[in-house]
Image (cartoon, rainbow, N blue to C red; front, side, top):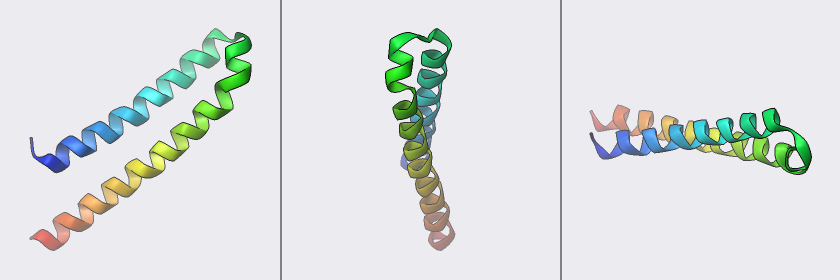
Length: 66
């Protein structure tokens, strides 16, 4: 794997893990869910934005690299 592919996989895995963390927390319910579910979903949105910027940056880099 190339370095840019590794970065892409890491970014996507981070988004997926935060998503599953939030879904698991909401499924369990309880006090932890009430306290942290909105914060976890905000983390997901931030990491999705970062992953999108990484994807666009890699696309831009590959476009100019050819």
